[in-house]
Amino acid sequence: MGKKRDGGGLTATQQAAKFLGVSVLAGAVLAGLALPAAGALGLAAKGTVEGFDDIPSNMKTPPLSQQTKILDANGGEIAKVYFRNRTVVDLKDISPYMRKAIVAIEDSRFYQHGAVDMKGILRAVNKNAQSGGVSQGASTLTQQYVKNVFVEEAGNDQDKVAEATQQTIGRKVRELKYAIQVEKELGKKKILQNYLNITFFGQQAYGVEAAAQRYFSKPAKDLNLQESALLAGIVQSPSRYDPVNDPEEATKRRNTVLQRMADVHDVTQAQADAAAKKPIELHVSTPRNGCITAVDGAGFFCDYVREAFLNDPVFGKTPKARLARWQRGGMTIRTTLDPQAQKSVQKSVSDHVYDSDPVATAAALVEPGTGKIRGMGQSRPYGFKGHQTQMNLSVDGDMGGGAGYQPGSTFKPVIAAAALEQGVSPNKVYPSPYRMQYPSPVSTCKGMWNGSAPVENENRSEKGPYGMKEATAKSVNTYFVSLISDVGICPVTKMADKMGIKRADGKDIDQVPSITLGTQEMSPLTMAAGYAAFANRGEYCTPVAIESITGPNGKAMKVPQTSCRRAMSEKTADTINTLLQGVVEDGTGKEAGLSNRPSAGKTGTTDGRYAAWFVGYTPNMAGAVWVGDPEH
Image (cartoon, rainbow, N blue to C red; front, side, top):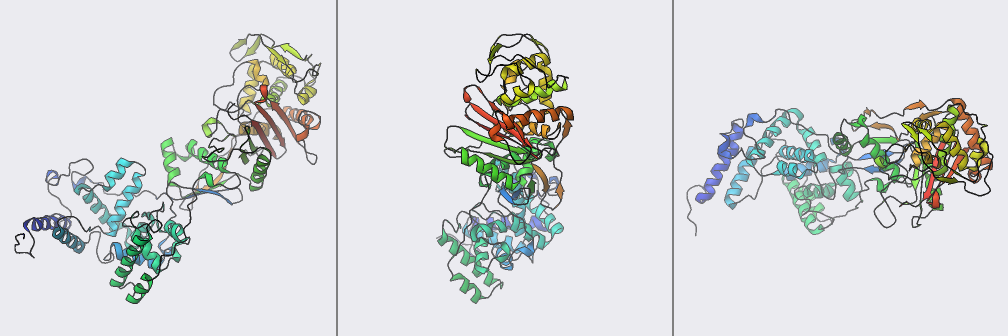
């Protein structure tokens, strides 16, 4: 039997542990945390502090990451996205049972002590000395809150998380000082509110509101006694006391909380006993996070909104800053998506091209004069399985898309617009044989192009002479090859730039006459926005997806605006409109023409039928549809 000494029968080792614990912790606190030299406590180790005075006086409390809601133009929800599933709520919106339960089990003397609970420290040190180990902690609820702030700030950086949670005296001292500051600046009610909003409750639920919704499908303000006790019990060990995966262990822990509430007179013993007899009744809600949950096939548009946020300096000077702001969330983003237009787009896409087809289709709608993206859909669903994809076939590579697709003859109106701007008459006639050689040389922005290659029309019956209107309606290749040879390549590529028509990979359009046939790979969104300039009588507006953003504080955030510029004269635009009306009235796009309203557009195909396009518009909407091999 071990030798006992005076002092409650503790061994020499236990007495030493008790003495050291009380001397260091209690003495340090009472002395204003004036600690001895750094070396005496090992405070010079990595992740600790060298002295109390070296700790910054103001604690950085990062805004808590929350859900962001992405809405359509009418305010309907498209999707929720979040880095951490959390919705911050006021203390008044948290059940009184929940407030009492968390205090009772985590820090029952919360309202009696300051930042540090001296009685708790003495009790814990004594208990630990008796057990010869660490069986009881002494952190106050305020100290726990401080630690959670550092963990929140660390995000996914595992080194920072380890630093925020490491068991060293240096970290504990840092935590103590900040706890004192927090008590002084925030007060008990605010600390409790912040604690309940920051704490992890398991099952991806951060904060009590998300936890209430996750486990019981109800708001935190409606939690009853036994539900509150269950959630409060989870906090100590979210994995061990997970009611979804281990209801038996969770029930034991819940009952411990209930008894503790009775012990501190938050509820009567009868209330605690009655609640303890009830089985756990969960109504679990599966978190719906990310663009994969978007309604009406708007997952790709949702993803485009994210890319627009992450790529625009208005939301942060650096990519890292923008990503941090996106992950922090708490925003309500109202977008330009028109729900009726989106349903129409997705229904048409789904009805005509199946997700299992070897070909795919993508479509984008843009409003002339505003640049607002009103619809975006594709046949391959947003996801990770079989025929699903995360690649947005409607947009450029830097916005979540791929390399784009050859637009074929839908590029010809750009050549016609450039020619008209150069003074070429719309009545200009070329011989336009069925087959011919590319004219050479042809002027470019950097000199002359010289070469030899054949070009032919779609059908042998297509042979001129043709004027511009008939050549456009029939999409006569040899006419437009002759036209670009006279106008030059440079005016065409400059016109394309003014219309926002660019390659999907971000590279410059090649200075070669074959661009006449639409050989440069582009995205449906680019083509829709470009044709919207025709509908808007020559003025191009950059496409935008975000109408407004409200931050977690209810204040409006600055959002990027469309930028409009004149791409061509009104006269040129009006002439193009007349030419493209002929396409849908009596040309290759006749099947796409509208009988009840003005419309115009252009068809396009590529060699081998690897892609087929129609880009068209009415006065108030422009759209582009691509069908083809997604693997080129």
